View: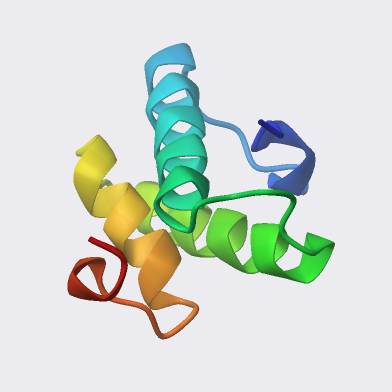
Length: 79
């Protein structure tokens, strides 16, 4: 799975936050049954996760949920 780091655009996070964001990014793509999402989809997910993490969120499930929400998708839509 792609890494979230290319989407950080100069933002800095500690190692734990980067790990959680990366896991959330991977999880959101898995929930979409990822078979190679277009770059714009990965970018929207990543940027939403980064915004929420920058506001202090550290729950991986919530970060993934917010990444999907940026696409207009709720967890009930992919479960």
